[in-house]
Image (cartoon, rainbow, N blue to C red; front, side, top):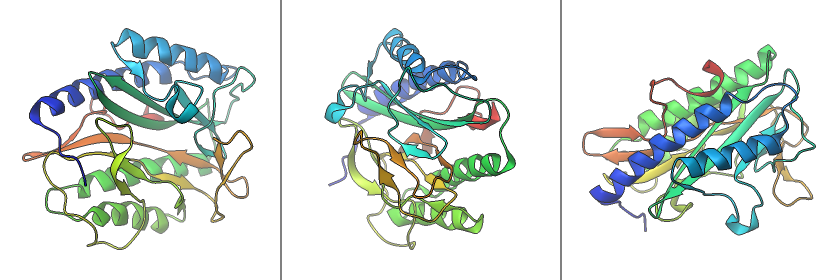
Length: 259
């Protein structure tokens, strides 16, 4: 059963998304060579609490931090550490969530650390464009797999590979709700999208076709042969008048590498 949100819940979600977008924008401004990821985690927790929320990830299923910081070949769920210092040419995926008034917002972006190579720039461009192509297909009456197909078919046409082991999801009273939203598949399948649905659409894309694997920390997911990976995510609300991207920055930009 896919939960539908009430108008009052949607109002809270919009505000949560706006606050989280500001947090992420401030956090991305701190990304630079020699910064360690534990410092970014501390900054993020402070910003979330200043915004009137709680870190959605901290303690979730035992996760030890407020954000996920995944570098280069790390796909998702990288744990911040004082030993992980960013280097010029890295790409860093930041996944962050906020809980306020009983409702969650979830967002992710991948940013360059200084100057990056053309392969990395291509990966970031394609992953973010895949996200927006999925969002554009999230219209009332469409099938859920139309969103998945829009993402996966575009990514594959650009010579890259979607991660199949991890998916987007519904979000609201729980951090992860129905439905699951793969980033691949045939169109025209699954439930029809309705007003009141709240979805976290999040393509994870890599440069190699090998299956991902999980490191010994039981959290960090990495690519199969060390290829680069990127991750972009927005929380969206479906309404009678269209799609509201609640975690989009106030300036209307597509986030991440475009800063």
